[in-house]
View 1: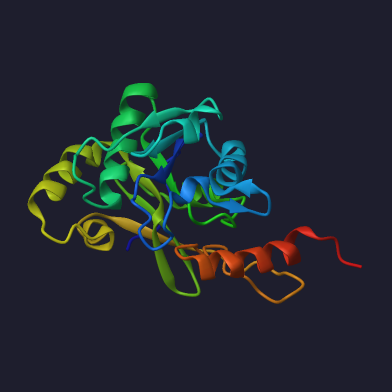
View 2: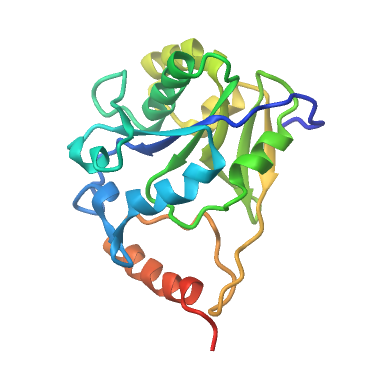
Length: 219
């Protein structure tokens, strides 16, 4: 990890990663309903004010995103090879649609409480055009919440095609990066990790409980 911000980033394009198979949830996470609205809708609403534009990495039914009038980006590498394929699709999209952008921001669709200042704080931490900025909370890395240099696309594609495990953290470790620590969110029920993610029906139930404490006004 490196530090010392000196690289200025304008508002980056943002891509929601929703290309996985959602095996533990049993149906696409993008259409999972939380508090009466789909998680995709919630993530779109949270991300849009932070970025120059939003697209969705999606390999399932495109109707899930078409209602939001967003560009849909299927994986450019076939075979459901993991989240790095979505990151690659995001990089390729940014290079094509925003040639002036040095970075692209990714967020996963299963994490609806992520910080409203995510993009701004990651941008402020980047020290060079080739550096990845990655979100942390309580010392834990959340590697899919990151600003990725668009110039890493070719290296990432080669990594996906040659590395057996295709771990996001391992790819980040190959390059210069900076860690950005985010505090827990205060709620009526206690502090909430803003990167709490929903992979199972049980975690969805937990998220419903958190949502009540976040959205209901205090008496």
